[in-house]
Image 1 (cartoon, helix red, strand yellow):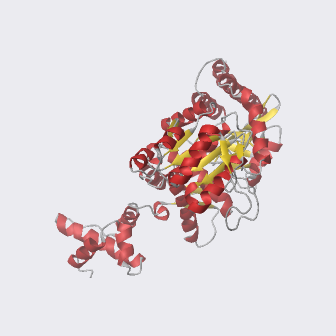
Image 2 (image 1 turned 90 degrees about the vertical axis):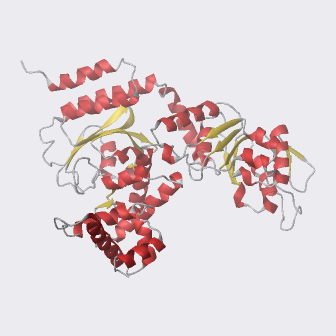
Image 3 (image 1 turned 180 degrees about the vertical axis):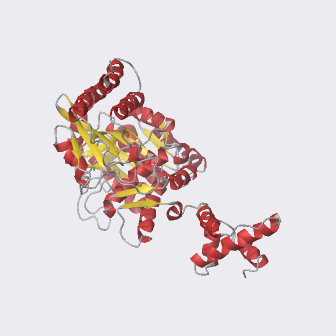
Length: 518
C-alpha cells in the first residue's frame, strides 16, 4: 500500500506540538513539510500586525526577506489572501504583482513568480497571518488539492499557537493591542518602531531591554552614532509599566544653551525676551511617563546641576518662577561620548553621571551584528520599494556580500541612507522603469568597493594576455586598461578615478605617468 503523503507530512508536525524547541526550529520543520507536500520554489510564514505582514520564517527567498515588512494595502495579492477565508491560487496570467518577484533564491536574473498559492491562518478564529507558496513554473500547482492545503494550514496554525503558548506570547496579545491604541491616541507619540535582528548580540540587547524595562531605573544608553539609541529608548519605555504614558524626547545637542533650561523645565511669562506666556517643559509633559535625553553629554554645566536636582527630588522650577512643580518621570539618557572621560575633563558633573548611569546599556555597532545587516537592508529595501512605486526592489548576491564585509562606521543610519541612494542610482541607470529593480555593487558605491566593481567590468574587456609575457608587463597592461576605462567613465576627472579605485591621488598620478597615460 502506498503511504499517504499528507499523513507523512502531518504526523511529524503533530508530534512536534508537544515538544519544547525554539521558534526557529519549529517553523523550519513546518516550512520543510510544506515544501515536501507542495513542491515549490519558495514558502513563507507571515504574521499580520497592524495591517503589516511580518515574515516569521522563509525558505527559498532571499535572506533579506526576513527584514522586509509588507503593508497589505500595498500588495494586492497578499490583501486578497487575507480577505479569503480559504486557500487561494492565482491564475498564471493574473495581473496582480507578486511581492516575491525577484526574491526567489537560486535563480539568476530578475525572475517573476508565475504560480502562487496562499492560505490565511486563524488562531481561535482570529486572523493571525498567512502561509504562502510560490513557484517560477506557471503549472507547478495545477494538481494541488486546495482542501489538502487547507488541512495543512490548520496544522500550521496549531504549530504557531503551540509556539506562542510555550513562549507566553498569548498572554500579552491584549496588552499589545492596548499599547497600540495608546500610542495612536497620544499626540506626542508616533507608532513604536520595530527592532530588527536575529544575531546573538542583538538578542542579548533585547534581553537587557526587557530586564531593565520592567524596572523604573534610570538608564544610560551608549553607543556609536547611528546605532539606534533612540529606538532602544522607545523599546525600554514600551517594556515598562509606563508604556501607556507618553515618551517625550529632546535632543540636547540641537538647542542653543539659552533655550535648553526652558525646554526642559518650562518658563513663565516674562522670564526672558520672547517669553510671552507660560510654557510647560519636557519634564512636565512627560509626567507619569518617560523622558528621553538624547546627546545628554552636550548639556551645559549650569543645566546639569538643575537636572540633577530634579532627578534627586522630583521637583523643578520653571524659568523665572519660584514655584515648585513635582513630577514623576523616568529618565533614559543617551550619548555617543565616554561620559567617564568627560567627567575627568571637567565637562560633565560626576554626580549627574552616576545618577544617570544607574543601568548602563551599550548598543552594539552594526559591524558586530553579523547577518543582521542583510535583514535591516531588506527592511529599508521594502520601504524604498513602496516609496518609488516599484514591484520589486532587491540586492544582487554580490551586493549582499559587500554589505556583510563593510565596516559601517555610520551604523544603521548609514545603511538606511545607503539603500535609499543606491535605489535611486540603480533606477536612474535604467533606460525605462523596470518591474524588478536590482541594486548591484556599483550602485551601492561603498568606500573600497568601487575598485571591485571597476575591476570586474575591466576584466571582461581586457584582452587575454599572450602566453610567455612576464608578470610585470602583464600587470602594467591590466592596470593601464583599468585606469583608462575608469577615466573614460568619469570623463577625465582624475579625482573621481582615484576615489573609485580607492588609491591616493598622488600615487595614481605617478602610476599613470609611468604607464604612459599622462
